[in-house]
Each structure stands twice: as structure tokens, then as C-alpha cells.
Image 1 (cartoon, helix red, strand yellow):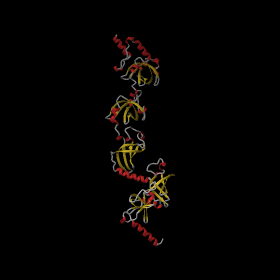
Image 2 (cartoon, one colour):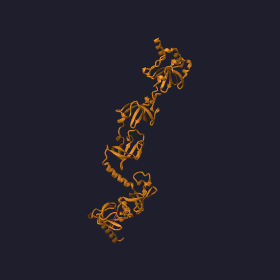
Image 3 (cartoon, one colour):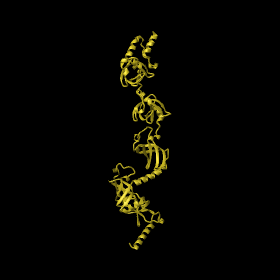
Image 4 (cartoon, helix red, strand yellow):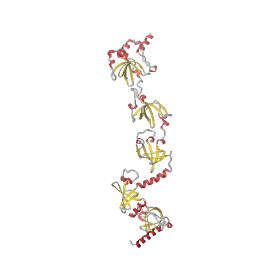
Length: 482
């Protein structure tokens, strides 16, 4: 190229700059969005006044409807993008990527101008996208701001993309839709956060679940955490017991704080729900038996949820009539569904006392009639002591066979009994009020019974009267009467 040619080129470029000098109006740049009015039209082009010395031009095809008619007229105002600037011409487009030239692609890439593209096919690792009549590649991770579960749903759709790589004169083009979406979300997030305050109640959508709670979207680009303890009044072991992805619910903003990792928003769903303890007196009553779910065990008992958000304690002493319980896990484990009797409700202190054993029924109810003195019983030896032998004669009812009775019947074989052995004995005395039964051998009972005349035999007293006397006491009463 000669010096004259160089000079001519320099003059031409200077002339081009002069056309967009401040005197002529604001200078235009590739990628800029401008508002202009239609000043002229022909079959192939529409000319737009942009405020510079040179009018802009847009292909008429871009402004035609499905029937092929241009949708604007002289004097109409249009919002357009500057896609290229050449000597004596400003190329415009309805989107920033329809000029259809490698130059426009390069200009859009260098100036960070969004371009329009149509997703035409899936390929390894992403999608083929048609941009300005050229094929571009969009990685699957860049087609959306969320995780892509169904890539097929994007096929055939037209989106705005940002060019992230443009090489070999437009032959190697990589685009990203995610960059634009995240930029839009960031802008929306900033605007939304200007109006959000702690204590606000907002609508949220559950986006994902974790082992410590659920993340919820308040607005595009704004996400908060509902801790597992704040998902509801009912106790849950995992977030999916309370919510599922996609659920929409109301939540209260507990805290907004900025950290090194970004903005953190703490939410609560339960604090916009009615406190179940406010109505517990209307729904539960002492003395009733209800079903509940064991939620946790402690050294002193087990907590049972009898209503959503309402828990009561089954003390370890209220777990069984038949045996001594050393730890709650010997009877129940978290997750078990059990029947419990409500013993007491203290709404002010948020406490409910429960009983497992009373829900099953007191084994001593009716025991006075069932085990009247003289009744033969078969039971299992539970324990042997110096003063006698403890024998279980029914679930929850254990009687004592005194050592004196064992010694008085050397041929009965009772002296050699050990825990687990089965023995047949007789009831000598029963006291339901103190939950005590005294036993004797069968032969001794028969002999004592035979020694008392029928006219002097005493019928068992009601348990309300303090229990039943022994056969010896009955004989004494008979002698006193005589």
C-alpha cells in the first residue's frame, strides 16, 4: 500500500469519526441501543434517523410480518441496535445479531453486545445455535442459569446469547445464554433487595432440598434458606417430610446478612403458621387415649408427637406394668407409632404428660375378683430371695411366696426352683391398693380352707375398702363372732 493510499485511508477514517463528532450529536457505538424514527423506505431497506450525520439502515426483511408486509411507516419510532459502523453507513437491527456478517459477530463479541440465536440441534457437550446465519456452539451448562434436566426442551427455540469466543473470522463461535440470565438476575436482585426487610412475609418457591433444610427463591436471583427446624411446627427428620421441590408457600424473613461468601437470607415457614399450642386445650383432654409418633428418646423417657407440633413426654416409669425399664429404647424407638394416655396438660408451660402403660390398661383392674384368696394360679418364677420367691401370675402382676411356706412344704420341690421355672400355687392374700399378692402352696390353701366352716367363710371385700384379708384373718373374724 502506497503512502497516498495510506493517507487516503486515514482521511476516510477521520471523515468517519467526524460524522459522529459531538457537534453532530452523541457518538454511536456498536452494540448501543438507539431510538430512531423512520425517514424513508424502499423494497429492501428502511432508513432511520439516529441523531448523527448519517442515517441508520435496517433490512426491510427484519420488519416484515408473516404475510411479508413491512410493519412500520415513515414517522414511526423504533428501538434498534447498532450492529456495525462502516464508512458512510450505520447498520441497525431489531436484535443485536441479525446483520449476518462475520464483521458483525466480531463487533458484537468485542463490544459485549447480545445476539439472537436459534437452537437447532444437540451435539456433544451442548447445542448447535444459528447466529447471524452461522453455526455457533453453546455448552449445555451455558444454555440456562439452572440445571438442565431435559435438553430437548430447548430445541427450536430462539434466545438472546452473549458471544464468549469468536475466532477465525467468525468460524469458531461460542455463545452463552447463562451470562445474560445471570446479569439480568443480578440486576433484579439488586432492585429487589432494596425493598426487602427483616420481618417481611413473602411468597417463596422451594428450589432444592438439603439435609439441613430447604432453599427457596424469593425473586429471580434471590434465594434464602428455611432451616429444617423452621419448616413447620411438626418435628421432621428430613426436609422432604415437610416440602417438595416446586412448592410455593409463605415465609417470614428472619435475617439478612452479608458474608464473605455472599448474601444470606434466613427464612421461616412455621412463623407464619398458627402456633398449635394456642388450641391444644380444644383438641386434647386429660384421660383420653390417642395415637402418636415417637420423635426422640432421652435417658428419662420418650417424646411422642400427638398432634403436629405438639409433643408430650412418656416418663420411663410410665412405659410398662410388667417390667422395670432402664432405657426408653428397650420399649420404643424414634418413628414408632404408639397409643398413649394423656395424664396431664400444661398449656402455659407447653408440657403434656403421657403414659404408655395406662393406654394398654391397668392389669390390676379386676384383679381382686380374678385372684380371690384360695384361687389356684400357675406362674413363672421371676426371682428367688432369702425371704421368698417372686412369681409372675399374670402380665403386670407378681406375687410373693414366703420362705416359710416353702419350708413348710419340703416335698413340693419349691425349694429347688430357679428363675424361669413354672409353678402352680394358690392366692393367700391380695391387696390391689398396694399392688401386692401373697401366695401359698396348693396343699396349704386346701388345708386352711377346709378348716374354716362354710358359715364362717368371708367373701372378698371391694378393693375400695382397702383390699382383702387373709384366710387367717377370716377365721379370726369368725371366732370373734362366735
